[in-house]
Amino acid sequence: MPNSTTEAIGRLANYPWLLLAVVLLPLVIVALVRKTYPSRLWIGLLIIPAALSLAVTLTDAWAYAVIAVDAVILVVGLVDYLMLPGSRGLTAQRQLVRTASIGAPTSVDLTVINRGPRSLRGSVRDDLPEGFLSSPEQHPLTLPSRSQLTFRRRLTPMRRGVAELTTVYLEVVSGLRLWRRHIELPCESKLNVYPDMKQLSDYALLARQDRLSLIGVRQSRRIGQDNDFERLRDYSRDDNYRHIDWRTTARRNKLTVRQFQTDQSQRVIFMLDCGRMMTNEHDGMTLLDHALNSFLMMAHVALARGDAVGMLCFSDRIHAYIPPRTGKAQMNRLLQAGFNQFPQLVESRFDKAFLYLSNHCKQRSLVVMATNVIDEVNAGQVTDYLSNLVGKHLPLGILLRDHQLFDAADHPSKDPQRLYRAAAAAEILCWRNQVIQDMKHAGVLAMDLFPEQMTAPLVNQYLEIKAKHLL
Image (tube, rainbow, N blue to C red; front, side, top):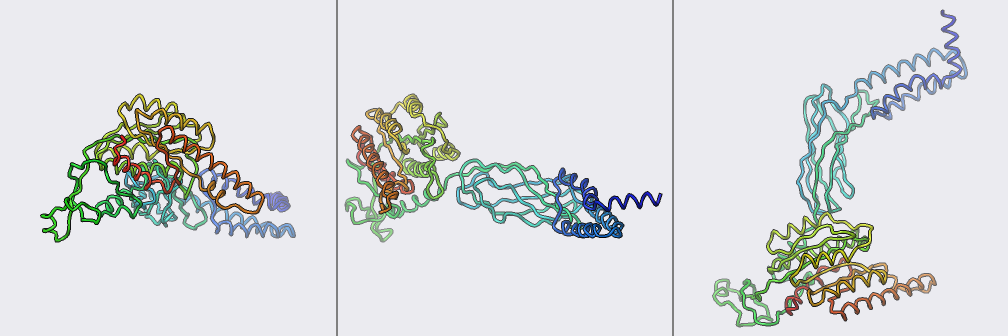
């Protein structure tokens, strides 16, 4: 029997790497199935039998030492692996607000509960949806048995819409730190990310201070007799002295005038194009993002003046329709309808959108649509359908500019390739200008704007329409 054992060892000595592989293979298979991986320390320990196995190739005397070392390392690694905590008894809870604004940090409380008999060491990381930033990204974890621990992080959404957080990720280490196990704990939460509404609060503040000119909004003089009292404000050099409220002036010791407005409630419909023409980006935001922000700003101004505001979202189908209504609650309806709309790589069906509008909006309204055109087919559809509204409604078409196109035309070069690009860009711009002129000749109010500079001109256009009673 000793001779047979010696012969077996001798045969194994001729294949030292096979010996090491046979010893470790079952452990590696089990580790991969259970999402458990060796640490750097464990890999470093494996260098010892690997070096000894290399020595066996020089002399058979090392065969017993290699087998002994392999056995010791196997037993130590196996015992440490068996002591590694599992997912049994582990749960996670997440507390966060239901709504957030894009770019605004929000606090998230993450609680890990350990009902198992073993302590946990390692790290914990919460789910991070696409387009979100987290500070910190992960937390160190030291959690005794039958206890819980709460972590707090700052989550900054950089993309609007419905964000789903589904999983909490744990990485626990074994007692000897030879193994690391990845554990996924289900924890589902939803966060509605809305466009940044800071512009609305800025507008309200500047309106109270009569400083709207700081954001490019002009105060348009209304044509006709102003007969409804709106508010009191500080006297400015252009005000009619007959509107001075002397009683309030004496009380405040400062010239104060009455501001009036005409009694008229109008209707505004926003048509939000969610097709492929709105997928271009500028400053990390798509054309649809810029259009939605400007529409919401104009809706805030219109609702503050007592107008009814509605919105129609469409691409190759109708996504959402909010009938025109007045009141502060309408702003929330517009937000709910628009915050989860994204540009899709489909051709917009203007025929479906305008047919739906004619069937659901019978009263005369200001119809505002922002889009982009790059070819005659697309431009012809926009011009034709907006022109068909003239008489029944007051259409306002906004063509959004492409910065790359204008930069190429504005900066020609002696380089033949860049010169050719500049000439092609100039030709496209001339064509765009002709499209806008065709829209104006058909009775459509048309604007050609850069997406990030759209808000102030759009609000000014609305105020001018109100002042001239074009509706």
